[in-house]
Length: 245
Image (tube, rainbow, N blue to C red; front, side):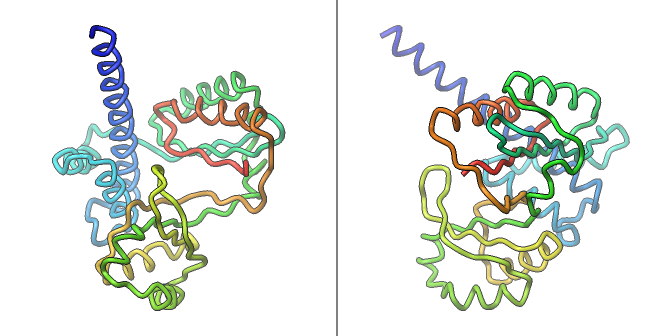
């Protein structure tokens, strides 16, 4: 009985830890968005995106509101976006996006991650040429089906707003999703079109999409994912992208 209790307690603490990290990352995303475009979601697409992402991980409304107020305060941490590039083992390109108030600390931590993961950190532009930064919306396929949304009609409408690609995908738990991608410059237009249709995305993000992929066997792929995991564990890192197939 004691062992079962310990297992449940470990699982509970692990869940809390994941939730705490998710809330921290959402709070920083909100802070960066407020700094760049102000505190009003109606006129700040990046903030609307950050709020949607916070809701997607069940961040309480009070915490979201507090994060916005904190970002506007005189004593707010000066978070800025920093992008780090490099290579994982076997030539896999990696890009890590951070929101940090101390770039010196963050770059030091990122170097440690690359070293531990048998990778090599690169200079600005060393791997970015192989990626395109795009706006990505993940929609609940089942919810669209229940609402009888005509996907072909939706696609044609979004093309007028800058849509680059729309297709089937899966969520973290294998649930069916519709993935919508657009150039980052058109993010606000696509977001507004979905809002006008009363379609609430499961998540929204700006992502670095690789132009080519590297195929590896399971053993070597796990070596790459070890580095990705090390980077994702760092509190300053918001997102990690790679071109592993």
